[in-house]
Image (tube, rainbow, N blue to C red):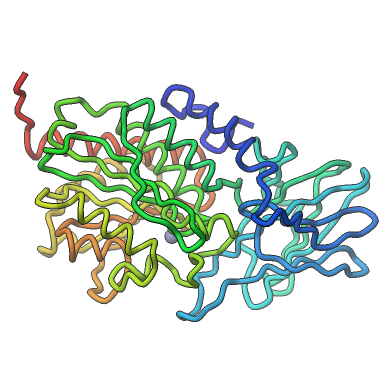
Length: 404
Ligand SMILES: [Zn+2]
C-alpha cells in the first residue's frame, strides 16, 4: 500500500523516511522492563502486548478462541470520550484461520482494524467482511489474515513517540529548525518543540497535535501542514514570524496505548486552564515564553473525530480577530468535499487548548479535526490548505518590510 499519507506527501523523501523509520521505531520496540507481554496462547495463536503503543488488554481463552478485553483508562475526572484503542501482536502458529473477539464491556467498537506483517513498517486495513460486530456493538469478532507468522493488529497504524521524534529531527534538519526540550512527562519522556523564525520576530504562530493518542489522521494532517509551511515560508516572513510546533504533546498516553489520557489519568485537552499535568503546564509555559510581547497570529491544535470539522470561537462576536479562521474556512470550503462543518462556540470554563489560547494569547483558537477514516488525499489537502492559507494571511495582514 502507498502508506498512511498516500504518495503525495511532500518534503524531501519524508514519506519514505517515515516508512523506514516506522519500521525500526514501531517494530521490536519492546515496552519498558523488557516485558514480552504474552497475554494468552492457544494452539493456533499467541497474543502479546510487549511493544510501545500496545493497547491495555486482558485476554482469556474461550472455546471459540481468544477474547481480548479492551480496558478504558480510569475515569476519575468523569466519563471518557469513547476512543477505544486496541493494539496487540498475534503470532499465528499455522495457516488455519484464527478468529478472536474484542470485548469492550460498557463501550463500543469504533475503529476498523489495521494489520502489519512487517513489524509496523507498512499497514493494511482489514476488509469490513473480516469484522463482525455484535452484542449491541460491545463485541467485535475479527477474522485475522492467515498465518503463519507474526501480525500486528491495531485500531490505527501505530505512530510511537520515537516515530515522531525521528520525523521532527528530519524536519528540523531540512529547514534549520531548532528542537527545544520544554519539559518532561510523568514517565520521563521529553516534550520537544520545533521552533523557527527570528528571535526578534514580532509575530507568533503555534501548531500542536497528539493530545489524544488514537487520533492519527489529525496527527498526519499536522505533519503535512508543518512540512508544507516550512517548505514554502519565505525567509522574509521568518524574519518577522516565530513558528512554534509541538508534535507530541502526550507521549505517555501514546506509548501506553491510552484512549484519551496522559499517565495522570486526565484528558489533557480539559486541563489547559488548571494545568495540573506536566504536559499542559510545560506546554503553556513554553508557549507563553515564546509569546512574550509578540502578536499571536494563529493557534492550531490538530485532532481526529468522526468527521472532518473545525471548532473555533464565534465568528460574529468580538472575542478575537477572526481573520485567519475566516480565510481558512473559505479555503477548506473550496478544497474539501463536503464543506467541513465549523462549530463555533465559547465556554469560558472549558480547559481546551483553544479556550486557553483565546483567554491567554488573545487569539482565535482552532481545533482542526480530521475524520477518523479521512482518506490520504483529504489529510493532504487539509494540511496543505491550512499551510497555504496561513502563509497568505501572514503575507497580507502585515506586509513584511524588506530590509534587503
Ligand atoms: Zn482529540
